[in-house]
Image (cartoon, rainbow, N blue to C red; front, side):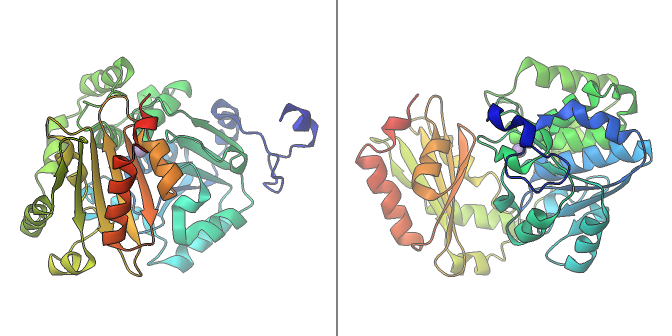
Length: 356
Ligand SMILES: [Mn+2]
C-alpha cells in the first residue's frame, strides 16, 4: 500500500489506510506523563493479563496514569498477580471503563490482533479515536487498525514482547519484582512451561535476566498450577472421560457440555490446559477440546504436534485462528454436530493439507 503513503493519517484514527508505525516511534510520546489505557482480549489468560500488568508496572514508573481494562473478568488462577485488583472488568464496570477510554491519550492493545477479539467491548474500542498500539504474537493482525506496534508470530508470548519493548526503551533497570512476576507467568503458560517450539534462546535469556534480578520462579508455578479448586479436578476427571480417540487418524477429541459446565460450576480459566492432555498421547498429533455455550455456540481449541498448522485449519473451517500449533475457533451448530463436522473434515483428509 505504499502508494497511499501521503494520504495516511496516523493520529486521527479515521483513515482505514493507516500504515502501522514501528513500536519505537511511540517512545517520544512516552516522555511526558499521559493517561494510558492498556487492554487485552476477551476471557484473558495469563499472557494477556501478565503482559498488561507488566507494562502497567513499567509505565507508572514514568509518571503515567495507567488503567488496565479487561473486556471480561480476570480468572481466579491469575488473581495473585501484582496489580490484578486494579484491572477494570469492562463487562462488570462498563461506565468506569468507558470513562477511562474516553479520557486516555493512547490505547495499548496487548495479546490480540483484531478488534473483534475484545467481543462486547469492540464497538467502544473501534470508536476510540486515540492512537492504538499493538504488541502481539498472533498471526495475521488487522494492521490498519493500529497506529503503532509490533506483531511477531515467532515470539513465545506477548509477555516476552513486553520485555523486548522495555529493553528497546532502555528501561531494564526499571524491571522490578512486579514486572518480572507478571511477565514470567504469561511466558510460562504460553510456552507450556517452556517446552513449545517458540521457546527460543531469547526466552531463556529473559528468564536468566529475571533470575539475576531475584525472581523466585517456583512460587509462580505454585500460584498457577497448584492453586485450583477441588471442583476443577473433578471437572478434569469428567472431561477426560469424554475422550474420543482415533489413533489411526491421530486425533483426539474431548468436550464439555453446557449442562456439565453448570454441574461442575465451571469458572473462567477452569478448563485452561485441558486440551494439552489429549495431546499427551503418543499416537495423537491433533487434539481438540470443545466447550458448549448458550444458543448452540461451541468454542473450540485445537492443539497439534510438529508440522500441522491448526491455525489455518481453524481459520478456514471455524472462523478462528491463533498460532501454528495452538488455535481456536467457533461453531454455531451445537456440540454434537460440531464434533461430527471435525471428524468428517479429518477423515476426508481436509486436515492433511495443513501439514507444512
Ligand atoms: Mn499470548
